Length: 140
Image (cartoon, rainbow, N blue to C red; front, side, top):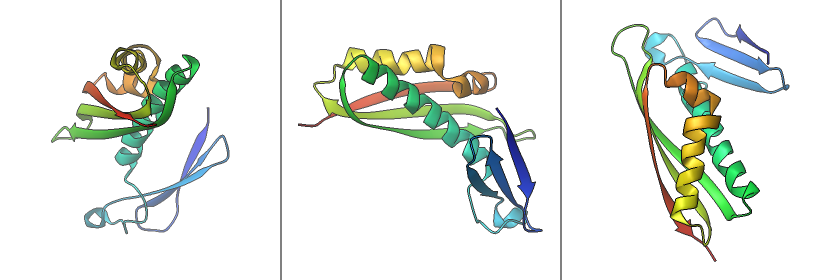
């Protein structure tokens, strides 16, 4: 995997170019010289973790032929007060939508992501306590 990050505007904006050919603008907060043109780098880390976990949950449920039609994960995080301001707590709340989804099946998918598959969570678990819960929204 490769990525390059380039300082782009003389302020605190950066352009990340991924090995898969995608770009992402990140920026600092205005009080740190940024112009609020994109997410903060640590917000990007948190979003990537949510994407990694949601990817796992969807894949696990689809492979099990469960009737999943949606998956959202809402993350809240706390960071250390001193540098390096690593994440110290992260909570993931999964909202899984589908037809006749059983709580035990969704709980297992979320747990498998957390315990086995999500690389981002595994890395962040070195400094943060990561918790999760879920809710199921029934559709017809």
